[in-house]
Figure: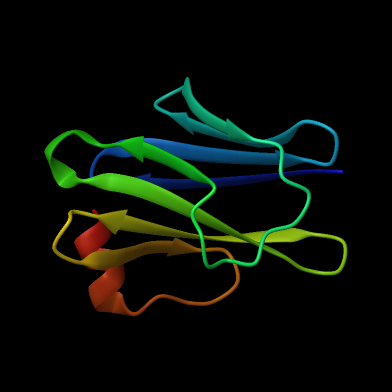
Length: 100
């Protein structure tokens, strides 16, 4: 089973692909940046990360559900964590605006 998450952060096109046999892959503007082949994820530790220039580090926190995976994405600028995407819950308008 394959699941694709696409969103934009600070002008970058982000794509996260999860496949049962291929694991998680993180793409930024079409270029692969990180991969992970962990079997389980609980959303507390980022499994995929990449640097987004002066904006900080994008961290992907996957959460294993029964037969699927959901993700949260946060931007870490060493001062604070900013939620920029969630596949399973709605972000506030302020969080959506800050991600652009």
